Image (cartoon, rainbow, N blue to C red; front, side, top):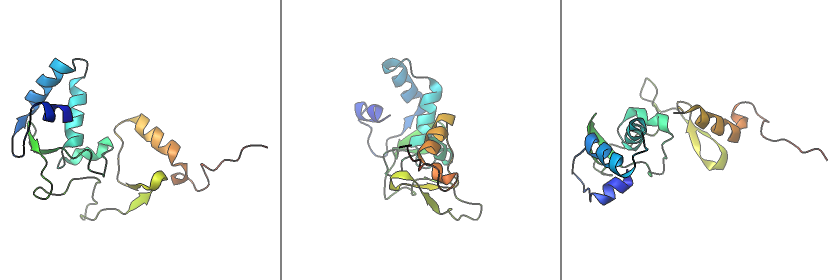
Length: 141
């Protein structure tokens, strides 16, 4: 997606269509499936509620687009657009407190995983979330 933006000199306020991007990917990366392109649009659209299911980086690395409608996007404008969605808020609008995980990162209880392999990898790195004491195994001497 970032390559598309760079190669087409997309500027702030310029509207791009899903079809433009799909066409570019078909020409330059023909093996990438339409579903993968669509998933990346969701992940990189700061105002798409479904982006929380795609392991979005809270560092802003995935904050590329602002979704106008299902088929049109523009570049995200930090400071002018609403803050990006990183975690799901509770019904009362309150964001659940984050849970600290390995590496000093934080995870909301509402976070979802797009793929079973993402969940597996996360749990393997954070066994203590399942039960205290897991993940601290001693080798036999």
